[in-house]
Length: 408
Image 1 (cartoon, rainbow, N blue to C red):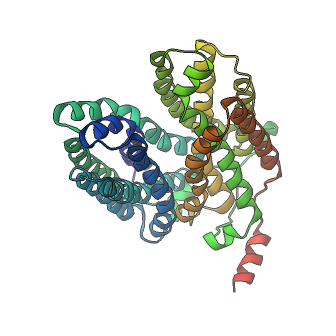
Image 2: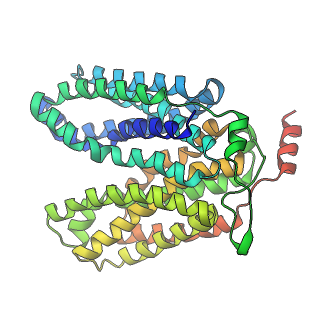
Image 3: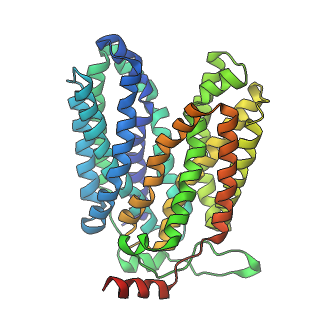
């Protein structure tokens, strides 16, 4: 099997899953049709993200046992059914259940499958291929934005859920049929020869460690990496979630001008996933992560001064989006580097909870503190993440044996 077909399936799936980030397009039409309060409608998105993140734990474990194709197929069915049921929702509780819970489970079940399969097929390009896979997720909202707007204008918000549910179901299930785990012989075929010529770092960490989730959760390395992921995601989301408000309040921009940041961030976010993933293959995952945290810290400290005009505002939020994309591209590969690929689906499911939590922590911090203090705090936790990156080392085979003995 050509391994690039797996990538094609992964990108097709992730684009459709990433359309969840276009949720804001539904807010006003739902308010106009049902008379619901805006803050109640917005909760739907928060429920979806929380359920999505939590579901990755169970989906990852299941796909490690029965393979990514079946789990992604089930996820595509649930996502499509959730949206089709949402078209019949007449109360907030129904919307929360159909879109937030059923749709969220569908996204969570599907999300980890293409990532896990791609990383296993590309031991020679882990960072790059993770970046390509998650770039599709980052672009999903941007790609589907005009289509969602067209459906809402054509037939109303409820019918648009039905049309989108059918599209997601068909395309996600189609992409799922291309997902397949490689055999050991196929992995060995693509395994790169590790060299450190000219004092260049290895392309990725060479380890035969294959941690189960229980073993991984008993290592201090997991918790260092988990908090690093949390700190990076919090810093990114507090800017991305409030980009328009930051432009209006801190750069004194008109609403339309500040709104341009949304599209710019989406493009830089997707570019960061691919570019930084590729760089991590060349210069090493830790080196790339420390550079990303360093750049994020510098921008956050600058933004905390409040001295911004339109060009500087766009530059700052674009670079934050670029770095944020890098975090989401690198941590699947980091999880594989440190804890092996055999249980990558379930292991990354646990790692991904850092991102799920950050979706709530980042906005809470911004709502609790003025922008300048929130950015200052973000800069400090990014500096802390650099120190943590220096400390974290690959668990040794001795650690694995001790864990196995303890478990026995």
